[in-house]
Image (cartoon, rainbow, N blue to C red; front, side, top):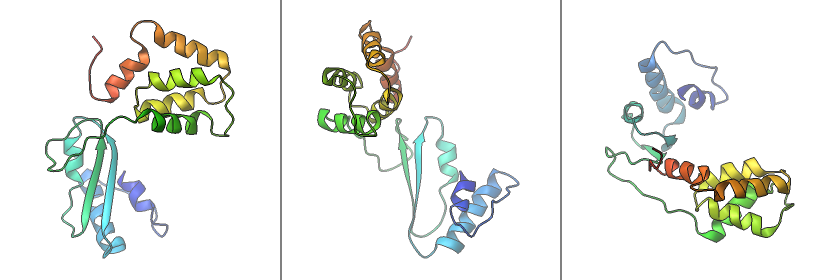
Length: 170
């Protein structure tokens, strides 16, 4: 991760680190020398439960430096947390269609699109993954997907529960 941040500055060659501590030290030096005096926002996306020590490594003593962590899990060490709700149906349809019909062409019946979106329960991650997986697929694939989900508790619902930090699996 540190290598990618430092390489984002086009004038920098790929750094070589001796250790994790060296990587964090070089990141701090990079921020202070290359980015300062501008404010710095480091975004750590989709962090998993148990990665608290990794996040702690990025807490640098730099003025104007902030970290934004996105996760399906709550990290109690942070003072400020904000829990996002699932998408409403209209927003879920918009997000899903963006991925399922990238070229703007809908090749399946509207009721199938509605059923798939309802099956994703407003989860942005599920809508994105399922939309990408059904992109340019024939209608028969959409039908089989909906049928598979209707048999008992769907695999998709289990994945959504997992993504939302719930463990519904035995």
